[in-house]
Amino acid sequence: MRFSPIVVLVASLTASHAPAPRVEQGAKTVTLNKAGVLAEATNSQKRIIVPAAGQTFLWVKATASAAQTIDLTKISLTNDASSSTLLGVDGTFDGDPTRFAMIGSSTLKGGGPSAPLEESWSVGSIAFAFTPRQTATLEIIQPPQSFCLLFSVPKALQAGKIKGLGPADLNVPSFAHAR
Image 1 (tube, one colour):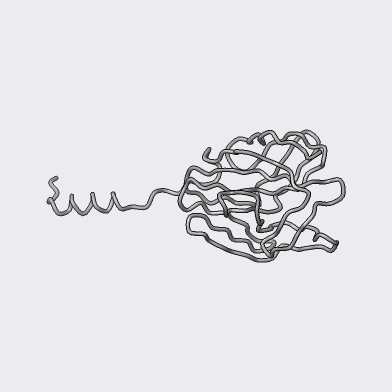
Image 2: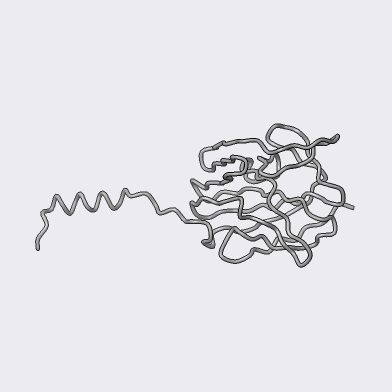
């Protein structure tokens, strides 16, 4: 069977302009770069939040090397003694822990609860969407992109693994507690 040169040209142009396939969560495309602790953090409403008594905030900077949509509700930090769900994410300022979009409840500095609010934003190459009790996603549009994850963990925590960012658990990079 012979194809006309126009059919071949159209087929090759269509194939070359097809969008790159999206990598679904679970592919090994996220690495953890560094981690640290915070006595307090700032949420996206520019309010200071603090961890519960006996807890500290642990932030972990991650970099995604492929376009993908990450289901933030599946991310947790575990160690032998405890498990912590993801509280917030910061996808601006190259993943530095600056201002967190919250997906979990927290406590405002000075007291009082702070429930997470519906929120969505995009900075062009990375986007966040959260609807309470429904969805929480981080979309990597143009990799590589760095983002920061926020957890509330026991003050004594020295190491852990993050579940939900890839096919295998990822070791949290070494971090030091403030003295």
